[in-house]
Image 1 (cartoon, rainbow, N blue to C red):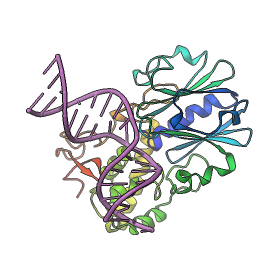
Image 2: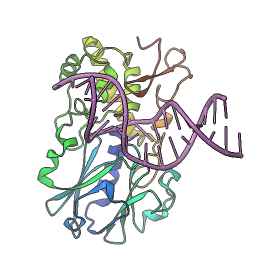
Image 3: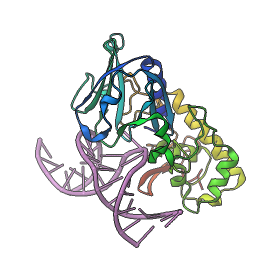
Length: 285
DNA sequence: CTAAGTACCTGTCCGC
DNA sequence: TGCGGACAGGTACTTA
């Protein structure tokens, strides 16, 4: 879920609702996920919200930014007098704050941004805006297929180049954020299915044809994910606390024992590099 | 350097 | 019904 399409959906919502707001105070209910002195950002105005891979950057007007990674179960939910009337998904907790709300940004005009995180893996860091790219996650992040903020997109040629350099299984290579930004388990499974490539194939064994199919498949599943507002198979919700729809459109992810949409063969599940891996043994050889 | 394994958390689901 | 164990998107760190 929080892969490129989910984080992009959150970004679109935050960009729409947060920009122009002033941060009046920061309420830390659990300190461990937050780094930096909240005093540095109180009174600052939010200028823009960008996404780099699965990471978010909220830029303020005082040369500081908030760098955020929601990892597995983080949620960023905006509420004000108007959005409060829209019901939150039960995945967002129905009413905020609750036991898993660890940070609250109190904004002007009685608005709030809630950070919920059941598993507490995510992080929020206050960083000088010109130092964002020095943070380990952002510094090492590889190029991505669908940049949100004007970076150069990963081309078919550069994908072919980086895949040819890796000898390990193709699926973990796709999910390596240092090589390609934004792809996680759900979309890696579906893209490999769409490209008819077995997840265990050595990365450098793909033909030119296969790399092209994979490139197109990755774009297709990521676009579909964004169009469906992300995947809420676990607890992902968008910036208004509502669920996405991609979980109802997955090709093979989560479909162990069901029929392949292509050939009718039974979809199998296995474990690859520690992650659940779904594939059609007939279509993906 | 790469690559594999494990840690970080809490909840859910499945089998006994 | 109750309980232990496996598993769940994703990095970050340690070990080999």
